[in-house]
Amino acid sequence: MATLVERAIGAAKLDASIYEEIEHDQGALGQAMAVVVIAAVASGIGAAAGGASAVAASVVGALIGWFVWAFLIWFIGTNLMPEPTTKADIGEVLRTIGFASAPGVLNVFGIVPVIGAIFGLVAAVWQLAAMVVAVRAALDYAANGRAIVVCLIGFVVNVFIVMFLVGILGGASYIANH
Image (cartoon, rainbow, N blue to C red; front, side):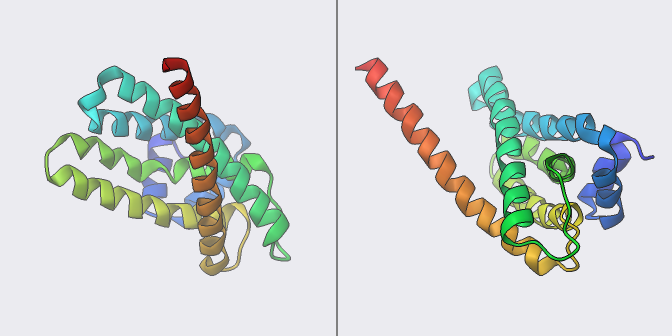
């Protein structure tokens, strides 16, 4: 069994065998959460303008987003777009997509003017590619195409959920302050 660091590096390398290992290791949920938190801390540091509160908000947002993404991917992949070989539980999806956050550590460079934005873009694209590999492993898909579609549908639904929550929270904040 690989260590957290070995798994995170393998996940960042888009190594499908690492994602398969993580999928089957029920004890890897804590490691997956650690990867999400580490990537979120890196993002919070990269957005240093907010200081410690930016880091804390980044971690909380990343953990909530991880759970929402996992549920959406699991639901869409197992109920709306399963293949005959698809069998997955929410834990398998949480573990694999948690490790797909590994390239997010590049967001720490967001603190550097000009090149920070480049690193952010690279991290986002890299995480998307890792997400596809993770989804393919978790949902036992034969090819990347279906995993890409599941990720895209999940992304669109997630955007609407976030917009809804921001609208509610923003509206509540407005009411509280007026």
